[in-house]
Length: 566
Image 1 (cartoon, rainbow, N blue to C red):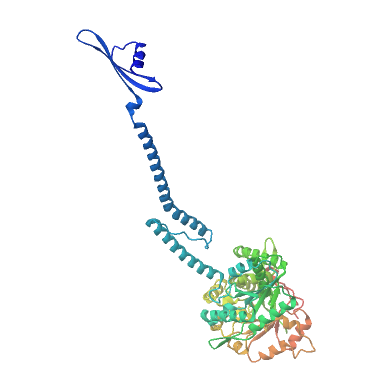
Image 2 (tube, rainbow, N blue to C red):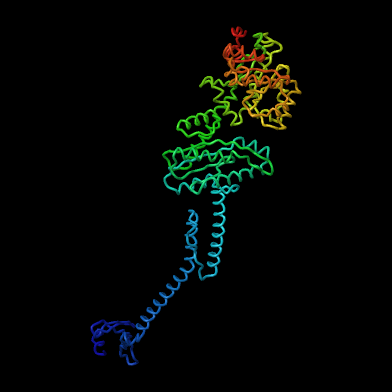
């Protein structure tokens, strides 16, 4: 090593100051330090120190390597422990988040997260699970309230739709049952007893039909009965008969007997598995039944077009009122003995700028259903009173001319009816003695004290009252004797059936005989032939109206020469 170092230095320029050198000897690296030195005799020396790298460092590289290995192992263990700890913290939170997502989609059967080993996450998961359990209970309660009628415990509309969606193909038969005049029953009995009545009806329906039928209460006074299996016409007729039998017997509520009449809308053989569509079609058929005053109707596609037109007419009716498109047409009332015009009935007509003259048969039922009949009636009353005053002033009509105007039951029940009548008479200048208000008999409710009270108040104003379409309703004679009226109008259906052979046994003859001694005027409606007029005179009916004399006309077209008066 000394010899090799000496040779290495000899081949290099000797340094003038201390210097570090390195070289390799026999494959090993040596570190050298050479510094010049001059002694007291002037001689120059070079002192050198050499040491091998292995001797200098000793075991330091091995220790360094071991330190790296130990550090790597410790770091790996730390990372593993960190991941384990992180996983224990995050997993319950992630599971809770996933469960929350599933709950948000309506999946209440998802697995709830498990509690972790860390206090904070354990508290979080437990709170979430408790909240989920409470939400499940609340959801099932709400679902039950949605799918089942809370009063009758039958299916609700939504429950029937949901159940039928799970049945698969629908090839059965749907019967919608509507209780006629349930509002009047509810008002007369009270809502509590009305609810009791609905419960009894539901029980009767459940007992009458087996498990193969789905029964629902789909509205306040409507029930739905879906027969799941295909039904023949005979089987459907049998089901209709059973329903009619259910409602034929009186219902007893707290010792009060109630007789209920129902209307049916029937749906079958439609190409749809959507119960919502079945119910819509059933509702259309039920409305058709009520309009025709029938017992039941089968749904037909053309009914949907009629229903659509009715909806469109309803939408136009409000604008028509604002534009005063409703005007009175007048049909003369004639003294059958003298042929003299003694009055006229004001009939509501709708003249649309686009559709022309719209039949009252089309718009009156819609107005009654949607609450427009009161406004239309008041408008007709006001205009008719003004026309009558004008007609009397122009000598077109006699001073004792009797104006007949129809008054709906809705108007009769208005609390401000009397003030409206007073204002109308005052504004128009018409005498109360010239006005007769007609009330349809079939719309009167037996033993309704409000009706009797309001009618008496009208009479006290000096206004006359006529019972219209007499004989078509179900009012008892005892009830009629309580009503303050001074005119009966015999319905046209009875006049049309008059003939010489059975004149004395006719309904018209019975009505005339019944009213003797009641001090009321009789007016026959719907006179179309001279023979009918002559037969009525023989029966001592002194007044009448009909196409024999004139069709209803606006005031401006009032006929001045009616050839059939006498």
